[in-house]
Image (cartoon, rainbow, N blue to C red):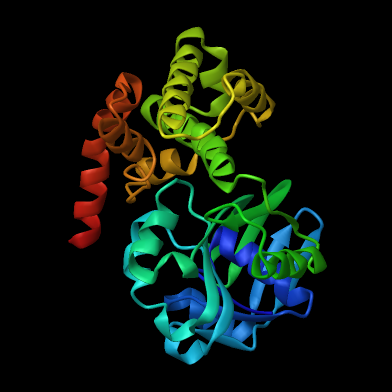
Length: 311
């Protein structure tokens, strides 16, 4: 199976390295100094088990140079999904498919609107991995997984083949019975923790120990649960309690990417997270006052970061 990793950042780079290490045919699509470093020296990934250095056969910023692939793993930020979708055509054959890994629930529909549903498989991943320097990625912890599935949840030969590729690479890969349920389960935790942490400006340990911020976190999750059910996603009522138990197991010093980006004055995924909750709730007739407060409170920081980027 021939695989392209479009966006060799933290998550994309970690999974790309594992696939190359296992001898898979993988194309890296990156840009700027990161791409140049990979071309010259390979991609170095530091993990708790040690370092690995991999050299892809092709590393490029031009999809036309990649050739036809069986699958594209899309690791760019949520805000870039639609623009990137316009460039994927040269890599897609009749049965090629794209797997978005963005934290959110809108990536697959956005891709489908550009590429058509036959070329899109829904997906998500879990990894604490980030770029530390051009050509270098650091991965923390042992929780590294990828989940994907056809939009109609049917079994397919192509998703089975991708799962085998990840299995061969030692990556925890799964095809859930309901990929949309899996997406919303992750959406519930990342949006709640990310939004509350960004609003409070505190690590997860502080947020979960303070009674009022812990309650805010639970209310945020409850709103997302209500929205999911209203949109036909079969989440169980117990998911809030189980997710809070997961939050209690996280490192106390941990921070969310949304929080880190805004604190650093960088554009974040606010629109794809709490912003998406507000938009989808409006379309579904659901009230989400906590998420709306978080979203509107963080918008000035988001706008400042985006204006600074354009300057």
